[in-house]
Length: 265
Image 1 (cartoon, one colour):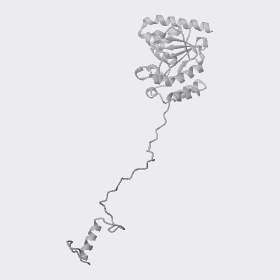
Image 2 (tube, helix red, strand yellow; image 1 turned 180 degrees about the horizontal axis):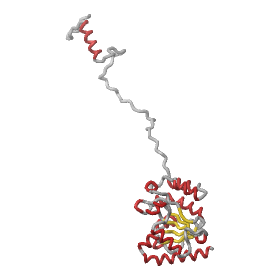
Image 3 (spheres, one colour; image 1 turned 90 degrees about the vertical axis):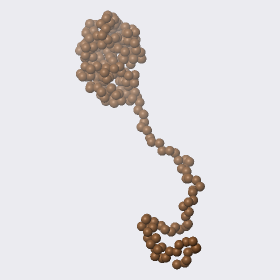
Image 4 (cartoon, helix red, strand yellow; image 1 turned 90 degrees about the horizontal axis):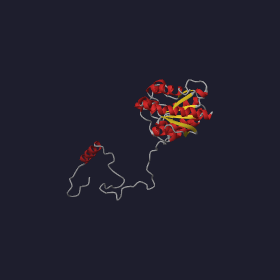
């Protein structure tokens, strides 16, 4: 073994071999490279990503328009039975999740008078029919006074009753504009299929859906047009139960309805 340069310790073959074996035990498995490597050199510039490489953006789910979905479903319904099926299957209205029953309609579909209410209450949600609670019982008495009933078989004496909303809002709150907008295509198709001579708009929600207006105490008693039909806004029977003095005005509205039916016939 050649002598080492001055200033360096002399090691023999056995010591060198022992040192190499010790390094191998530490994990060194490549003691000699093909070319010298200075590990203290610093790269002149860190590698950069390709300039034309576009960032990866996750694809978002395509937004669904609940009104467009409702319109397509309603327009495809050729009769009331199918309309009830597609509306009850509609899943974009949150009210459906908290309701017990889907409330579609009651009465005679051949009736000349269609009553458009607001939304089911507790009793209606339990029974699955519109206007069956105290307000509904008052409504039946009111229209019986002018010779109309939901149980009548003849079109001239019959009523057909439905609501803007088929599901009960929590705590009987007013339906929100977005909820009304979702149900409006179903309401329009419903009225188109029944094809009544006139519509009675019971309360603010009905007027908002049919006329785009609120303020039932101002609107009531004045004929308007909704869905291509003569429409009479009336105060809701629930309001009349709380304000009996308003029954006088409701009676005047009923007489207007009776007179208009006579004119249309």
